[in-house]
Length: 435
Image: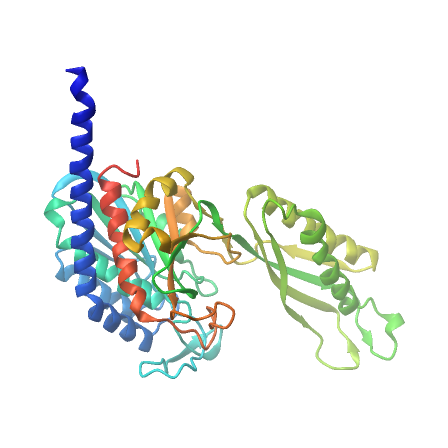
């Protein structure tokens, strides 16, 4: 019998490959057929954006769509989140798929028929509201994924858990939210999720392309607040003061040495940015205190500690040298871990991404110093997070409007690729290819 085993395994392998190719073709056809619906959903979400923990209308649309597909639905998760549970007809793993829901306090100026005119209150101010990061497309893509997979329910080897997550950009002041809160409220349990996949549209990657990275793909982030306290005086008599403005200027300059002189940038990038300086009320009054706020970014726990410790040391010791004091809070309001793609999982699922987009269209990318709270899911279960092209063909990444800006723009022709990729990842993992 032994001499026939190679032929037996070859036959099994060929049969599995043929079945997989057939599934890929079915998914591709179904995704293409849903193209108009995906665009319509996305445009509706875009025209009616809602800020984090305020995604009430958005959640209602999603929940109704999932229920119409026969999917079990949980609402009000982490305030406005929606969880859909699709139990397949055959036993198997539980695959989590995540899409974020919230918009940003940005006033849109893109000339499109479905541009947002919405205004809302944010931190006590009236602001324009815009889907300036593509979360509208993420929701529309996953609604289509749910429709495709629900149509294959009896053939699914396992369960799919759709995680529509609020407040990815951060919960409003004084509130909890986002992935961390969804996890705290049991979104990864009952049934327990074995693996999680997610995507993010990218306005500076050409449509039809998928980019990915194993390991640390997006930075961990902590915000920081430094309060320098000195002694106030008349601006004409600076010798009577301990000037917190001068001290703050020295601190900001010295902080730049952390990345250039302390971090081994040949191994991992890091960022230290001061984005806010607040102090003083009149040109001829030296204030008593100055407050600075900023962000630090890193890709390893070692670098997180290195950067954080050095920020504290530089701020406090510089202030002390001038006779002032500095209070350093890191983090003071939010902290996201590194978005870390499980290395083995990424390697095993790479063929699924290549099957969806074509091998030549799946590209390895450098690490990104932006941050994502998808990372909280990856701390609990193995995860893979990848980027989907949203820039018109022939565009330049150098000139395409970036995320979080009023001119942010997406080419909608690439949305169906996101559907194909998430469906292929789900079915291939269920078939055992990602284990």
